[in-house]
Length: 211
Image 1 (cartoon, rainbow, N blue to C red):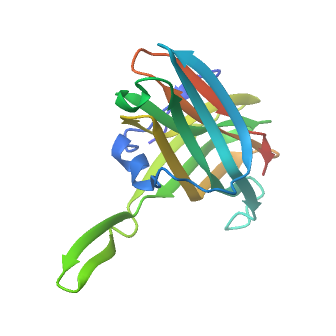
Image 2: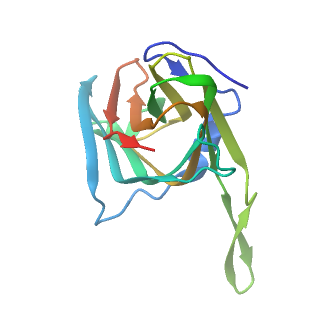
C-alpha cells in the first residue's frame, strides 16, 4: 500500500503498529561503548528530552534482479529517547518514532519500501529454572513511500509507539530498504524523534548515506 506525502510531511503505513516497534526494545542499560552519531534535546514541561542515534551504519548493496533502476540498503544502529528531571520516571504517553528522509533525482513510477522484523521473546518457568524462547520468529512490518517523477525529498515514518517512563531504546538490526524505478542514486538520512504527551517534539537527523 503506497502512501504519498509532500515536502517533509510524514508518510505512515497502517501496518506499522505501535506495538511492533517495541518488539525491538532493549534493556535500559544500553551499550556502554556505543558511538553517538547524532543527538538533540529540548525542554518540555520542565523535563529535558534527549534523543540520540548510536552506532548507525547504512550499507547499500547491489539490488536483486540487477535492474539499474533499483536500489537496496540495510540499516543497523540504535535510537534512544531519554527524559531527564524531577518526575521524569512518572512521565506518560511519550511517542517514539524512527524513519528516514529520502532524496532522489528522478523516478519512473518509483517507490521506496522499508521492511523490518520484530521477533518477540517469551520467558517460561521450568522446574529446573527459567526457559527463554523466541516466538514469532519473523513477524514483519512494512512502510512504503511513492516517489514523484521530479527530484524530491520525502520523510517516511517507519515505526512509532508510545512509552511511559523516562527512557526507551530501540535496536535497528538489518532494517531493509528497497527503491524501485529511481533514476540515479538515492540519499538516505535516518531520524529518531520523541513527541511528548503535550505535543512538544525533538528530532535527531543523522548524516545522509548514498545508496
